[in-house]
Image 1: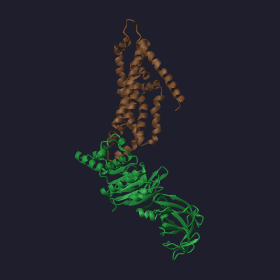
Image 2: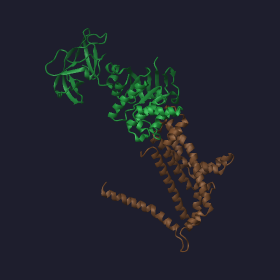
Image 3: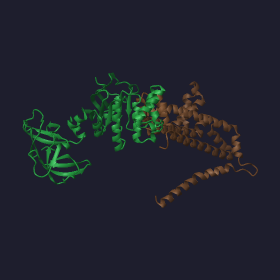
Image 4: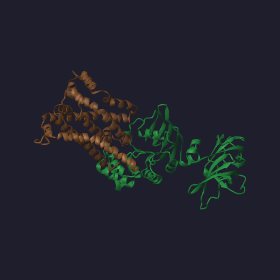
Length: 362
Length: 259
């Protein structure tokens, strides 16, 4: 039986539906990211789980108890806010102790737990500092310790890293994951940063317009996106239109070339339009003579240096723009815009949809 | 900034200084201008030795304190609740809170006397009426400064953080909200206090001899006494303004340095 159950939760604000019939479950100790653009309903859902909002329909079940209409005070959830929300009138240690004091824990126990948690987030030495004497990253560590102090049933994090700069964000990301795994606490993590969601989570829920468009492991969401929105929001996706020539060996015409595409959807017949969803790293590029009959002629539009790799924009048959990645491997890239190149599939596309996408139909 | 605009700045400062300081200096000078055989503090001594002065000062202090307390008891929870739970009502609450600016004191007093004049037991006593009227006068000042405090200190999220950790409402209020808007409350309270110390219209219409009324009566009978009183009330107001500063600085240092 799942530990946390979100069952058909809907929340409307006047005419607008912020969360629209969202359902998913989380096992005990699982780390689940709620990923989506701003205004997609992910924060509203988190606030419903925390008890700061009441859903118009649906249920929130924690450990078998229906807590949908239980007040925030009685839910025992640990919440970390984007704005840290440390109490400015208290020291770091007092902030961490707050939840324990409201539960009237014995003084020695409070002392011990505050020390343990501040040590865990690496701030035992700064326990007497006030919030404004700590950096943003330190404040968020205290906020995390504070949320964990009363042993909450579920840890809720609302874009906790979005106010921090890039380097601290990456460090703290790993640290949050480490602490979460050490404590084995079920966690919901709201973010609009796909890299954050993919790198931290056991599973990801992708939100769009209040709907959970896909629930899956980071690999599933990345390799087999359930919708066009997911494919574009998580990473970059090329939508390559093709026409089925012969479904049996998987022959498809892409522009002027004919390729073998494994894994065509069942039931397609010759002449059907399909769209191949291919990640930038799923394409290979070569120059010179045509390597084999699987190569598609294309022209380089732009080469962008991205540190560990080059990003390349090319155009197939002078019409269909495609993005691909070339790892650097110690050599300078020899392509320049205007160069003729050959493109071929490095791996079968994760998704092949029947029907063509507008804009880039061959 | 160019040298030229610097000069313009100092000219304005100088003119403003002259405008404010010359009358003050003249008042001080006049209050200590005595005949050759009288000590310069005679006017001050006259005021201080007048029992009416102490009675009126005491009355005004009590009334000002009562107004601040009534105002805080009504306004703090109201402003907090509107801010937290029904923000769409805020324009209405704001409107009600500035009514005391719009309704002239005479209308306020006549309304109070007509409505509560008789038959309401303790509410019908003149003292209660004056306290009530002052409580109403305090509203706009308290509401505005408390509302600013609530907005600037991120009180909504702090409240949610506290509730999420199981804190009861009294604990949220006294442990989190009040300490964090303390300087806003103090600011509004001292402003109200200073204002009511000099209030004349309401108290005189209700027949009280408050500090404001005493000042006016003195001004009608003794010219130098009035000047001395004016200087003393200035000092009193500055004292309160200084107190605001001290409290604000304490509040800031209690939270660890400048913000």
